Length: 369
Image (cartoon, rainbow, N blue to C red; front, side, top):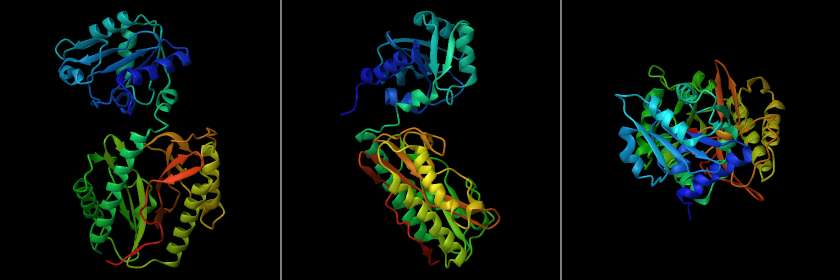
């Protein structure tokens, strides 16, 4: 059973108390959506939810959003403002109502102009970056969260299977990307987790390259597809690399190295292991191979409402990972100007091990096209 609005807000109130700050402020984004279970756009109009440690929450809401805000069921004070009059008076009224001296905010999400508006209303206000603590409340997924993610992943894998079955030599990367996007929506996606990465040949060696209209895929190419559906507010993030028509000895050796690294990370995964330990094992496999100079990325990142969120699976992050965490295991090797290989799974950490939420085959795949 999901928590009520008051219960969800109390999570942030308790966090504020534990941090020793007067209140926490959320702006539209994944934490905001988690708190109220409604999604609002982040645009030029400031929108703010403030949850004090020991007082009722309050909100600053653009007037044109009031009808949608009513659907949230929020019973705290609401300060609205109109485009025609600006938001300065609403910020002044909000800060006077709250009567707080310290405020923890999302440093990676709150925009500078909202920060400035708060200080213009109350110059003495001490604003603290609490991105890690605030976003940390999302790290352990509920059963409802996992179900939404699994649905997003299932949609993604069905779309990938259909897309790969349609690939033909001579198609452009952009044509393959467009087929993938269409199929994602055909399979039931609410949206895209992010703009897909669909690249072949030399572009597959650039981890975040964009599909090209002027590159026709050819026999022997590595085709790397990194993508995900979004469903019920949660994202999938999957990468598979396949070869078209045939694979070279080098391609096979690189692929098998990346697969060994992926499997080594899975074998290391269980509640209590640190992000450092997982990355150290995965990266260690790559470093011990003849292709160590092709390492360009860490092992992975947390996944949920955001595509990239805590925890970050990288050496030096000694955070123990609790059961209920979902992370991406995505080792890769990238030879600039030649080709790259990445294999990415979405992994749920359990008390005694892990569950791989992605089920698309990882064995070396050569597409007859």
